[in-house]
Image (cartoon, rainbow, N blue to C red):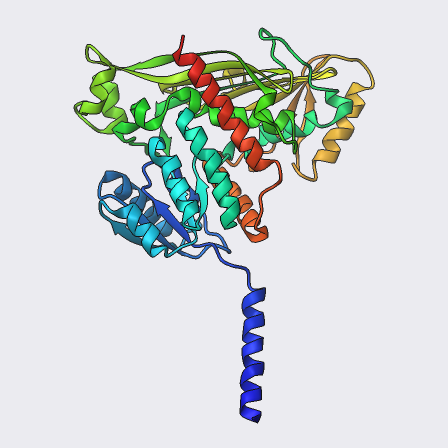
Length: 449
């Protein structure tokens, strides 16, 4: 009896320890066709198991992914220690669902397949950490609604990777817009002068982690990748919601699409080869050829109202960036007391720079100084430098400008917090649905033009 009693006590102690220990995230990376999948693992995390299972078809995309992880593990500074188990073959998705060696599916690849992967994953009781966009067409939007319904039933999380929320100038722009003494209230705006606008310029050929990025040819096929007006615009529409209406639920009934358009970036055979490494166009791209020039509908613009406020979002893809430059972001928030403007042109040395353009007199300057001091607890070292009688430039220390690649670690840490708590913020899911409703409505309007 004494032995039985001690055994029960020991079992109880072990059970308590198991209950108290947080459940660790164990990643399964599915078909990593986009380099964002690797950037998630550019950093090590305390609460993510170092063993990651990769399920993918054989091919150059998964080999590039594995090579990136190997480079992170073997770099001289801050090496990671990932142990990657590769499960390769045509039945990769079925194997992942059957074996389920992890509890979180990471998906960053062909956007045309993504929503079906996500729906099957949540039905199988898996959490999802997904690169944008989750949705590329109206049918996908219907499936997304089912995804969130099933995810709630199965008590799993679905979270899309919104890195741009962590860009420091955007973060400070949002913080200043939430300070009535500085910003006042967001204006209603007009289609010609929207209350909030976002423009993003990207480049098909660029460098990632110091090396030329080789994109898969399907990245240039809008049937597989999705058109630009529903791809990168996902970030911009998200920022409009996140900055203009922080922590608020936004319903799709509060969105009115006014106009939208899309246009093509034209690529020569030599440019196509430099982007993809391929000497000839695959058959699925030939439908987009005019002569030997490839037309890719990766550019888009939309004008809409959100809760009655006018918003404008545009995305442009060029072949490559001028020397010394890169992807750029421009943004304006128009308030009753000031405009908060992010520029990234030659005058800013092609670095995102935030300006505060005052519309009122004293005591604006003293209020701005007080506000900057208050924000230094979150953004240490920032300062307001007077440029003219009514314009200030926000000086930001270099250590806060960590760059796009590092934002993936910040988003992942956010996800880890939500995973630990077992719930997303109350506004995230309805606003995700509304975000994709907005991009799909713009897409529908643009292709009808």
